[in-house]
Amino acid sequence: MAFERFGDDTGKGILSYPTVTLTPEGYVSFSMKAVKEFELNRYGYIVLFYDRERKRVGIMPTKNETDDGALQMKVRRTGISVYAAPFLRHYKIFPRESMLFKAEWDDALNMAIIELRFPANVAIGRI
Image 1 (cartoon, helix red, strand yellow):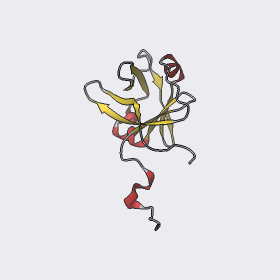
Image 2 (cartoon, rainbow, N blue to C red):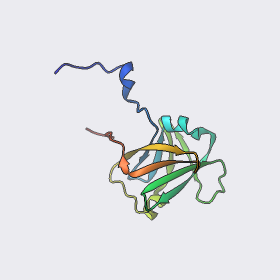
Image 3 (cartoon, helix red, strand yellow):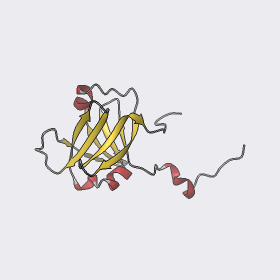
C-alpha cells in the first residue's frame, strides 16, 4: 500500500464541524470551530440543559453570571472549557473516556445541541 501525504488538502486533522467534548473529569470543552461558529467569545458563561427523553445536552451561552445555573467559561489554547461535573453527575452522564460530539446550533432555542446517543466517529487520545 502506498503512503498518502498529509497536507493542506487533507485538513491537517481539523474537523470541518464544531465539536463538544465531555471528559471523565467533568469538563465540557468546545473546539475552536465551535467557539468561532457559535461566537462563544462574546459571552463569559453558559447554562446547561438536559433532554432526558432524547438524551441531548443543550448549551446556552450567556453574558449574565447571575443566570440560574450559569457556569464560567475558561479560555484555553484549543478552545473553551467549563467545569460541569455537578451537571454531569446529576443527570448520570459518566463518560469513561473523553467523548467527542458534533454540536449544532438551534436558532429557535438559542443554544448549541449535542446528541449523547451519537458520539462523533473520531478517536481521542492514544491509538
